[in-house]
Image (cartoon, rainbow, N blue to C red; front, side, top):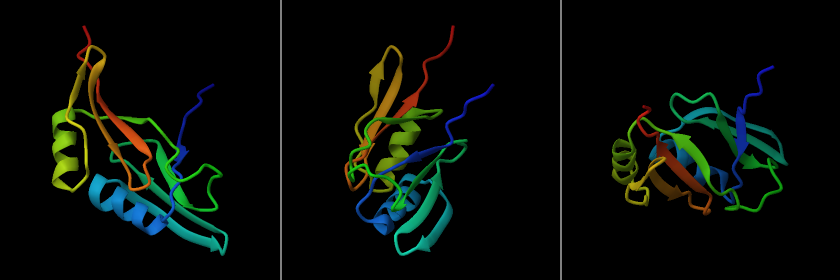
Length: 123
């Protein structure tokens, strides 16, 4: 039986600002933006090539804005990912070289933190 993570909630204070950040600066695809009712707005965004999406909006999660820490995305090249983020105005860390991969870290406007990992070459 397969168990697949397909949606991760990201707690934000301003859904429009967060959507603009993830789509216009980070480069996620905007899949859905639906105002269900006065209490629920569902915004689904997907990183390019990912089978897992994020959801943000209003009425999505009880987590405090900025409390989602360390969501990790695998990228083909950490240097290219770093350049993309910097070129689009995202305050990203320099590439961090580790034996288990090369990493770039950044936060959204609320302080939710992300790690981009380039996997090490397999022997």
